[in-house]
Image (cartoon, rainbow, N blue to C red):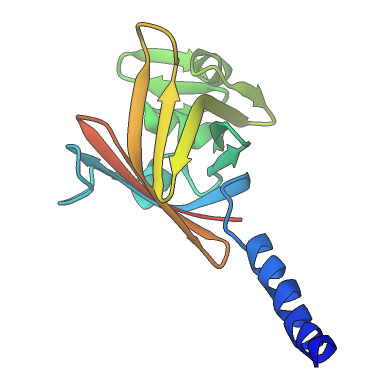
Length: 183
């Protein structure tokens, strides 16, 4: 009788251990598929910036990624702008290899360099990243940039993962960002 009970209980042990492996984890690389940035500490009202409005300015060749390790998070943006798009951002038109505006002419590669980009083949490649430390307690998250300095910036919020989709909101006293990310 006891041996039958053990045999019946054995699958429960395997399934119980298997469920733990499916716990959602932030660790890994995530691609931002949507974001809304709001003025104020709550993510309510009309957003000031969205992924769509940002792509309208910088083009569809823009990617935003978030890389989580066990205790750090790196948020990165990468984009490529054509020479024409680069000039248009300045209110200028492309003529040859220069942006022509009423204020004067500027070489396209110089504009790209001023934006800390790399210019090649009529394309300006730009990238930026910021690394912060983070902690989580249940569904709460706290990110701290420049920890241990007078310039420390703290964001607090919530996160949840369902089917490899991360939903996260982060707020400071003056802004709130709601993001959807996928693995």
